Amino acid sequence: MSLFRFTRATIDGALLRAELADPASGGFASFEGWVRNHNEGREVRCLEYEAFEELAVKEGERIVRAAIERFGVAHALCVHRVGALDVGELAVWVGVSSGHRGEAFQACRFIIDEVKHRVPIWKKEHYVAGDSGWVNCEHCAAAIPRPVPV
Amino acid sequence: MNLRVQYFALLREQAGRSEERVTTNAATPAELYTELKTRYPFQLTREQLKVAINAEFRDWTTLLADGDSVVFIPPVAGG
Image (cartoon, rainbow over all chains, first blue to last red; front, top):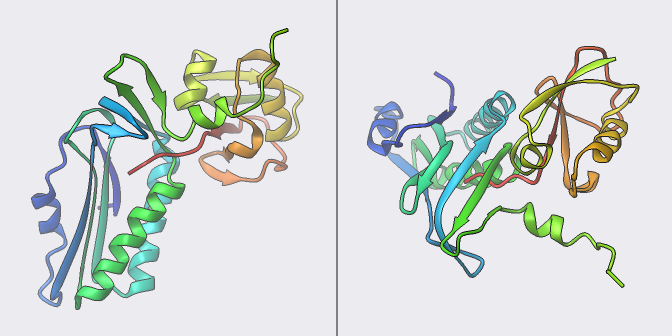
C-alpha cells in the first residue's frame, strides 16, 4: 500500500496507527492537522481541499520514503483529506513507528513540514462572513500592483 | 502542437474550467502561461507558480512536446 494517500472519507487515526504496528518498534509518534475555526484574523466556517492527485501521491510518497531513510524509522504513513471539511475535522494524519522516540518525532515533523511545503494540495477557506479565499493565493494575487484609477 | 492543460484551485476558478485541449505555438511552459494569461484573468505571476509536465515538476524553460499534459501549480496549502 502506498505511504501517501488521499481520502474523501473521515480519517480514522486508530486504523492507520494499526498499519504501523511492529514488534521491533518501541515508539510511535503521530501528528493530526485539524480544521481550525479561524485563520489570519478571519472566522472560518468550513474548508475545501483540492489536490493535483496524480502528482501529489508521487511527491507525498517521495517525502515519506525520504523520512524513513533519513531518520531510520521502521514505518511511516501520511493520509490527507480532499473535499469539503467542517471545523474540527481531521485534515491530515501522519504516523511514524520506530525503535526509539527521538527519530519518530523527527520523521513525523519532517513529513508534515515537507507535505505542507511541496505537495500540490490547495485549501479554500469559507468564512463566517460569507466570502471565501484560497490560502496562500489570494494575498499574493492581491499584492500585485494594479493600475490606480484616476 | 496540441497540449492538455489542467487547472486547479484559484486557476481553475479563474479559467472557469478544470481542463482543456490547447493548440499552441508556445515552445515552453513560460510561453504557454503568457499566452493563457491573455485568455483568462490570471493574476498569479510565474514567480508564484510551479510547472508540472506529465505529472512531474519541470522547469519553465522545458521544451514542450505534442500531447504533453501541463499544469501550472499555484502556491500550495496542504496540511
